[in-house]
Image 1 (cartoon, protein in one colour):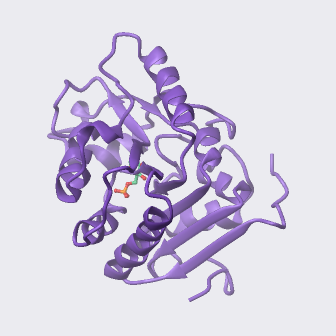
Image 2 (image 1 turned 45 degrees about the vertical axis):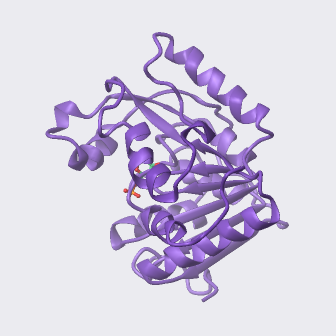
Amino acid sequence: MSAPVDQQRKLHLSHHSAAEIGTVAADLVAGLVEERPRAVIGLATGSSPLPLYQSLARRQLDLAAVRWFALDEYIGLSAGHPESYAAVIEREVITPLGLNRATVLLPDACRPDVDQAAADYEAAIASAGGIDLQILGLGHNGHLAFNEPGSALNSRTRVEALTERTRQANARFFDCLDDVPTRCITQGLGTILDAKRLLLLVQGRDKAEALRDALTGPVHPDCPASVLQLHPDVTVLTDVEAASLLPAGASAP
Ligand code: GLP
């Protein structure tokens, strides 16, 4: 299945060094917060957004009224597990940026009914008025958040099984592969598409195929990130290595 690309869509793609990606992305977040102090911002985990969080932490921004929603959370880790995304976001975002923890929501994967936790999370995003800016990384298999290949393009926040490829990629954070959870709660692709603006951060040659497929391949569940082609306002900040397989002319320096 492929969908026509909306002629009106705005995709801004530019190349930077890793340090510049953080600065440029932080400029964008800072501009949004200045314009809209009560902005709703979607947080990604993984290594890609770290330069952004580090750059934000060096600025004196008033983030008191901003509300934050994480993209996803593992199921099966104990509350407070250091690799739960709640703990990662505490370490990488809440503490360095000095945020009030109550302003940062994640799916509550420790609840006995995880399907209900997913539905409640979707409802919480809606009752905050939706996400103004969603920060995103990209999986090697084209996953966005934890939407693995095969995810419906209009999917909502739900329980999802992790693929072996994703578990292996994330095993670096755990003692061994067996410790990596097999399930998660993730915002859906449809949930992500509802954000007013998307900011995708991609670094490294190992992401080049996924980035090429996401931006220039067919819009298809085989490459979940291909939904970016359906969104009207996407900014992609990439290093030269990740952009190396994009067709000439696909980027504006
Ligand atoms: C995880 C996260 C994704 C993230 C991806 C890429 O699987 N759930 O949201 O985009 O990893 O991570 P990294 O940026 O470390 O390559």
